[in-house]
Length: 327
Length: 293
Image (cartoon, rainbow over all chains, first blue to last red; front, side):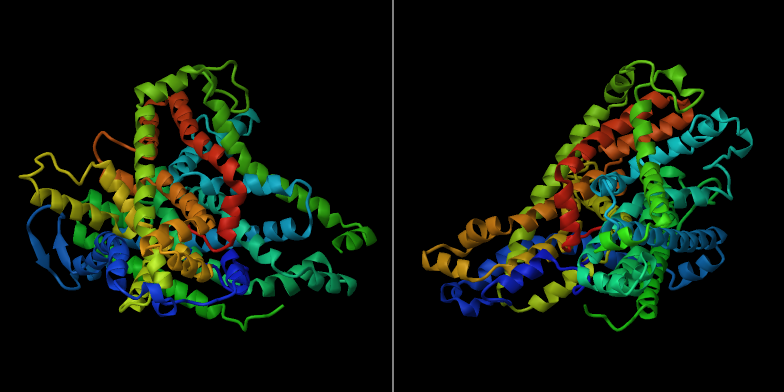
């Protein structure tokens, strides 16, 4: 994530900057010995990073936009400019529409559940002084260091039709009627993916919110406790407003990361199946551009995803704007 | 002061809170622990209740995973790719971050804006364009390298990893460099240190906390990636994550759970040990702005 919402979290860097005797940026003008030959040193220092950045990030990104106006298999020399044809074709593509719906559904469900639970856990951990909370924090953050393939593998095992953790347990309890084909049922598979996504990101957001909450001064709570405010009341009247900026940033960030996480997870866990019922936007793009060799078409999907996540982030950011509160 | 409140009136909510937190923690811990245990089970033990403990240490699963499924080999590829990637990214980002933080030059604003924008470009969008670009280079150089050079080359994969994490790395390091008072550099310059020496001998050691954060997050990103590795290394030389993905596909066909679970443990355990060792640092780094999804 690009930095933290300054003001809510006190970054180590900010404290150091404030503590330093001479804050602020310093140019070469401040120190005499750096006057000669600066240009060469600057160039030599910047060039490797800029070249790598340009070749492997800027050019491919521009290519996504450019190639969305072409039909090209990706390998043949036959490349044709077709204007907006790729985009109009998308509207009639039932699989694309389904992938779009799935992405939006996952975005909404996973965001609401993860943020709600994350906030609850963070508030409990910071305010309630639970015994063994560093252990809880350790456990809850574990999924954030695991790879998506591992998580997909774990959940494939948990959801396994015959001997998985869930179905096996149900069978052992003689509740065979409740057994489901978690990853093979068109109506269920998206929920199974959603569960894995929440499982993966919960601890990460909890730790983020804990950091925000830790910076709220204790005396605010003390004063309200003397006034008889319950912990629940304190949460809604103090904690939530004071970490609002923190929350906004994570929400915006959430949109982008959920689009990506759903892809990597779906790709490894279900491959979009059964019959496209768990396909999400990025996995459909990858499938078209890489597996199906409809490169231009895939890039048009990429442009739509990009525009979509940008718009949603913008809307979310607008809708949640409040006057920043000070404490 | 919460102690006073809780002493003043006992809360029934507190018990419920405990139950909820413990339930969530268990929901996270149990599947991981279950996989760790199941990796020791023999073939017949996978049928029936999933809650039975393994009857013995069925280590054959690990032999299968390491040797037959080539996970040992993939492990080495992953180590190589990750280490190389970290070396690349530090080698190019430290000078760039230092210059952006400390020097005035034409186009600095542009460089900063471009890198900031780069923070928002996720690699999942551009992995196929990168792949086709590399394929194109291979085709252009077919006379020099008939077997191809850029695709299926772990070093190129490392380079792509490094390139895609330059924005994040430079952003974090530059912010830290700016926080260091300029007096140290002035003193070093008076003592006759060159610009390069000031950067490597004076500033780099002082930026160690930021450097550690950057290394931690980039390590996790490189080690855990599979989309880029899957796309850029389509041949035999796979990384650990792609190897595990193959094991998953194979298991679906052959129902060979033991080998898959052992393979998962081989992937999980190093990261868990790493996490346990640097837990505090990782979470602090995240809270202090070194946050990456």
